[in-house]
Amino acid sequence: MKRLWSVIREYWEVIRRPSAYFSLGFLTLGGFIFGVIFWGGFNTALELTNTEKFCISCHEMQDNVYQELTRTVHFSNRSGVRATCPDCHVPHEWTHKIARKMQASKEVWGKIFGTINTRQKFLDHRLELAKHEWARLKANDSLECRNCHSTIAMDFTRQSRRAAEIHERYLVSGERTCIDCHKGIAHELPDMTGIEPGWQAPTDIRAAPKDQQTSVDPLMHHSLSAFLESR
Amino acid sequence: MRSQDRTGLTAIARAGVGGLTAGAVVLFAALAFSQEAPRLTGADPAMENVQAPPLARPVTDDRRKARNYPEQPPVIPHSIEGYQLTLNTNRCLECHRREFVEASGAPMISVTHFMDRDFQVLADVAPRRYFCLQCHVPQTDARPLVENEFTDMSATTAE
Image (tube, rainbow over all chains, first blue to last red):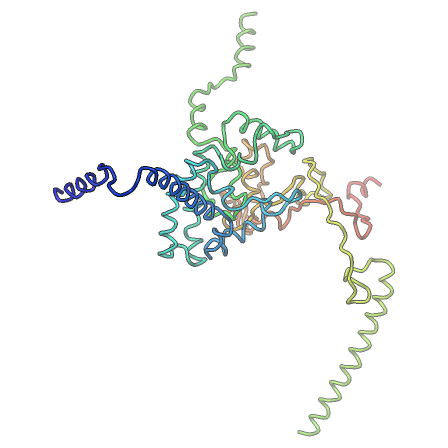
């Protein structure tokens, strides 16, 4: 510990001393130019990992999830808009993107050690992987869905009556978020036993009103008491 | 051995003649019927390209259709595009399961769907009833190839 401390101190002494060899102009201008190059390079590299081509360069993605995506409406549809992997799976905003990219180092680990390198292994892990994505989208209020689909731009009159009713009740009120109901919108689903659809109220909410319920309907109670009073 | 072979050959020849006559009969019958029903087997010179008819639009008006007979599985009056119906998940039951109808407003699967083939009532949908699309199908606005002359039995008994 003491040795480590002395090493750090030594470096600090070097850093805090003014340069004896390089001019101030070189250091500031050079620092600026290298800064630009470094930042540009970093961002370019980051953007490179943010492409569909990069995602499906791994056979795990190419053979499983990508093949499923190609059969869904997010891949091919009447208006020709296509969502690629990063559109849904990487936040667009910088800070969240960096946070997600740091998380993704775990995925690099998985790639190196072949956690899902066969179809069977992938299927075995599918529920866990899906749950991670559901939790992520639930936590950020389906941010990646809303990058394209906004509630405000939604014309409920152009939706089917069922869809419009459900959206009005759950989406507009903010009671639910996209992923609650639209699981498996772009990929095949894992074993969904015990995972209830979004329109089903969570168990704790469902259980609560039962205790408060009176045996007599309030409207009936009112008319009953009115009847008794009249007598 | 040789005579046996010879009888065998005649038998084959006889069968061949029989087959030919049968084939001819079928061919003539097919020709006769071809006037009434449209071809279902593609281009007339077999290798010709046929222009595919436009895809029919699904009926998604959300209105229940009367059944033609009591046992008829009701047809699906809404879009089921992209619905997943696999061993892992059943998108239909996410609305039509008994537990979910209150929230979804969908009609519940009928009580027959809880019975196995020995009429034992189970707690949930019976495995033989799991794949909804075996019986229940959506409709499209496609023009029927053959005119439908089905008469409702209540119409026939009324006569």
